[in-house]
Image (cartoon, rainbow over all chains, first blue to last red; front, side, top):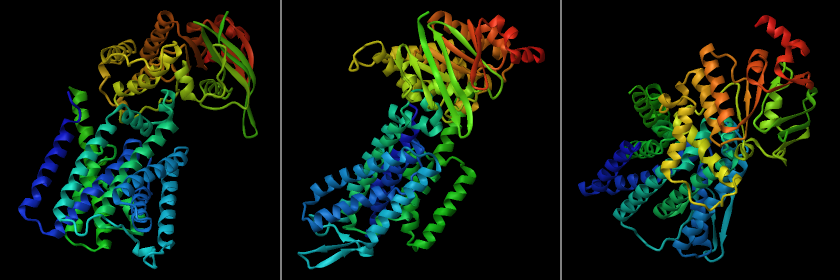
Length: 318
Length: 254
């Protein structure tokens, strides 16, 4: 028996549809919305590794995303690094930021993890807003609200190439994150999320495994950030914003914390729906909140989480 | 008797309250020692200190001749000192099998180290792994509930799950904190049988913390009585009521 057969099937079907969608003749705007949606879906999945599977509610998850976009921008535009090298270093950098945040947060518990990560994220956001970067070559400074451009090797990428690259990235990342969540490491994280006391009494080095959760999660969030930098071509302070962090947490709660597939699909679907309809940001925030409330009314543990629980009770009876 | 566990001059205060003032006792290999005391005597604090959940203010804990005082609870588990909790705190979303697997994953690694096997030795074949899991399920009587989420288990099954977790590291000492309290008579006697068979067949030593002298009399080789944070008496269980007034009261009311 393969416990995740249905989840894998759902993800496979979804990616199959997405593979064919552009052939139906989507306009470039919708293509762009979906491309960003793929990246945000990976970001929501990465949130779920630490916030859902390992149960460490991170409310400053944009920190890892923004670390990657800013590293890409600063290295390519200010230091004239080629993009691939900058992307690799940016990924490592967000991993390092994740390891550092994890080293501090893993000593904390429950709401303190949320408060601490929230503060870290906001700190980075403020720094990004206030910091100016002077480029001696160009003779003017970057930073602040407008951000820093990412110098890319291509001038005008075809929206199709971006779409398919991001879709491939999403499929590979979702697969990898699901594998991790169902591995032994994932089992230990789930145990920690359930009861730290019981985990400790079962020989689990809780602090070490929480640190690992932050590291793994930050690496995937950073990868999404690198993808975003490559797609948008600019790193802005919004990459560190609280809205981005909350969006990932909200999508995870709607999709089902700890299931990875749920948050990934919820993030993609909601982004495509709200952004695709061309709604203004304030309306989108309200709709995310409404979607969260509506889901929690009928699926208290998120859509995928509640479905999984029901399947389990059925198995218990038989 | 060769001491397996030595608790030496353990002191602990919470704020101005002195809970333990220099507690010293031993647990021998293959011995069942009862820790008796009325409510508030410091039994559970002592169990928490011996299992590594709470650090003592002073004193040492020696296990198998090694000073384990600085080790946290998870490291002590891997070293072969397991415990159960008075109020089980299971992983609500994990099934019984998964809960035990967590303990096996961490306990197994340490077993290899403890028995001097190379750390790089290959993992035991999956079938052996599953066999061990199954044997734990059968021994603790949880086989029928193995796919149940822990959140749906009865009190009796939760205590069994505590036992299952405790024996997954193949421990040499298990600390049972009030494991028989608030159970039905049937569950209580079944758990007592389980404890006896683990003691007899696997040679596990037990430190049985209880406020119930009848249970200690039935199961222990030796009883240590504490009151107000000190050891007030130590001896065979049948003499407990004679020497410790608190045990007498419990006898009367029980």
